[in-house]
Length: 438
Image 1 (cartoon, rainbow, N blue to C red):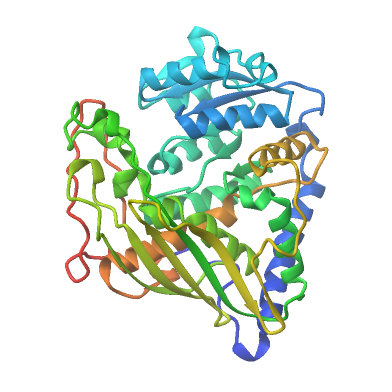
Image 2: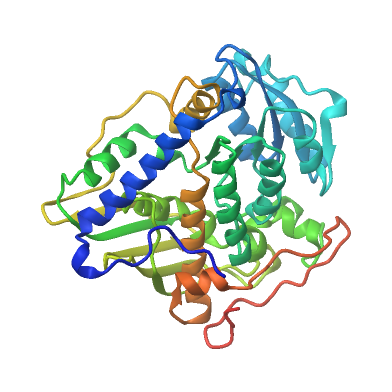
């Protein structure tokens, strides 16, 4: 049987828009509070203890993520690193330990012995099994469900970059894993840093408390320039090779999920959060590739998707993501319309001098060692990941996609038995009417 959301359809006469959001928010808060009460103290470190980190995926975001975590928590030490490519791992280590890019306070916490540097497709297992306290998952997102599964099964606290999957079976798995991590009382933080940004946190609370009245419409935008990976390797690798596709990972649907999943998820997640950490029930979307050349560097993703999502209480989210090659336009924002006003979901809060990229790690350690509230963002961001995938699949197939369709889908985009010498056919750019929803 497919898993059902705890926030499924409710008879219309029993629901106002505000009550819908406040009810789901109260439910989430009660769950978190209950977990905090029963959480075994054995699972939480003492606040003055060192916490060892192991990172899987040593690219730019992962490297900066380690530095940001240490800036917020001097108790952190990096003990293990894993990556598919040796040059990427060693380059990350040099940046963190030997360069002048990061502060001395960061550099002295880099304690990675040669025997704790792991390469290859099973590097994630070796990092998790190395004895570290916290696992950071920063690989391209196609691998996130597999790596998250191994870490949660091993009982590790996890920081995972968003999104949490690139296909529907992966998102279904992460939803199950999120519930399992809550049952185990693990701390799981996701790189959805707006959830730790003071302006957003305070604004969401005030919206849910009714400050702008009942929510009647929402908007989410990520309109900016493109992300191009793999340009340094364009002439050196075959476009069909798995090694090439992972160097140029942002251009391939199976490993990046397309812009709506990999990037625009941030804005979609904010609206789901405002609505009570729930998810839409259906979506109709359109999209395509206007400027992206049909060359190997650009893969098979769209350069724009526009989605009309509908929540169970009838509120809609208008979602628009677009990449322009010359970066003339940048509009990355959210807007919530209420019966008594509107909010950018930042304007009802106050700013903080602490970067949200640092704050999310401060919050994580406080959850682990018991000096702050218990935090587990896995289920909320898993819902947002599936929401984004629904929008993509609706645009690709030219059909309405419902939550139930998504939770029953058999879509699996991840290659079987991958190897550095392996090949993987790149599908053509999806065309509505030809592309089939699975």
